[in-house]
Image (cartoon, rainbow, N blue to C red; front, top):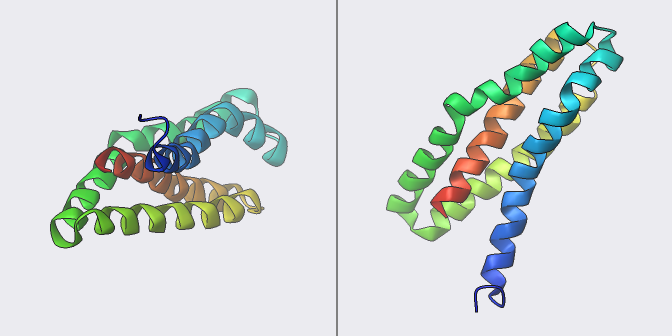
Length: 126
């Protein structure tokens, strides 16, 4: 009965929009930095690893804010929080991919990763 429930599929799509992005970034970020900014493989990989380091806190923050939103607005609060995160995530991926400065790209990637991980945490709350 779970597979026939539309809410299951909506949650599946929401999680794919955050965890799928994380998997893609983990696999492609090093080669992106290497080719876009002409870095060595080692430097590009070190910079790309920053994306994963945001997991140390951002997932928890996303879940915590989701819990707070739930206490004030119920499930609607959780959904508003996650929708906001997914919209910001979508905007930041465009900003990141169009960055022409290495420093700007790294800063945007940190914010982008934090939002992606927070969206994952908010999914767990739902």
